[in-house]
Image: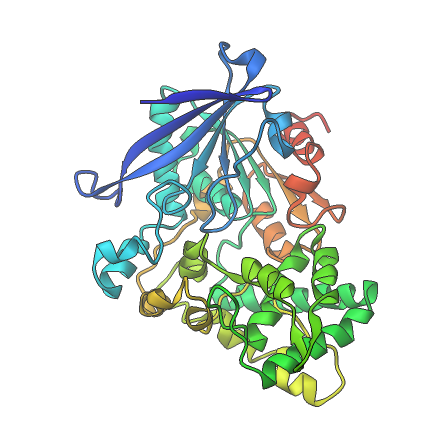
Length: 433
């Protein structure tokens, strides 16, 4: 039974759907999906076109807005919006250290999680669309990984789409995971260099924290073991519009004086554990590299292997000299399954996923080249998370796709730049610019 309720300016309806775990076996095991329908309060009784929102990730549930927040405010002017928790996230049969043991051992868990990629998400969307719109095509807005899913949607089921809007999420159609990370590390270094140019005092602060972690065993209050590599991974923050400023404030208050000498402050440790823990989104760590798997090659911890090609990211070597410490970005490493208590029970499962060689293609180049769905994509010029060069190559491969390339926003432009980003994409697909 669907339940409706109100927040300021909107009417919300909780909706649940049953879909096959494996869409190739519709009579087999099923899982439950959750989505939140949102409509403007003064339009609740009207017939409106539908917009499906696909969140970034992988591994994150859809935004939990309060009222008409961010881009949603603009969308509600003309759409009824469905905020879908993709399978395994949020309230859609979540996949975590607590739930996955129900599947059995690590091998069974890995086989289960192999069904949690973009192709399965697209098939879920089609099943949901049949119930929600009565079969009418809808507009899809895909942010980041949600954009990857949207390109898979254009490949697998374009008949379900009226319009496709993508923000910071045009994937490479053919790059292996190694290629993705080989392009990523130089982008990450540019972001770190820009941060230190803005906040030069952070060079010494970051080195001091890293040196402390190399000589002390630090365990955060939630049991997370804070290694120097884990500290470096806070560079993930630098890909968002305000991330450099937030990182600066975090580093500024790292130490306090104690009778035993300087120690990492409790407040610093509390903030760091909230930033580093995967407790709220373990699927992100488990399947992150698999989103680039499309052939018989294993992903095999590609980010970790490629990092060795960039020795400037080696903290011990950096601290032995006088170079600034380099933070890292959106990369998943095997040590995360040792340092994070939310991931430790899933280490063997992650290893099995990294070793899989049966990944199937996620994109259909021929179908994309013949695309007839209106598509517009925001490409952020120096996006830390998604390579702009790869994105523009894909844009040229999708017939009729129009791009807006901008350096005004970072990867989170749909949040920080709303409603302008959504306005621009709608104008592009409607030939208004």
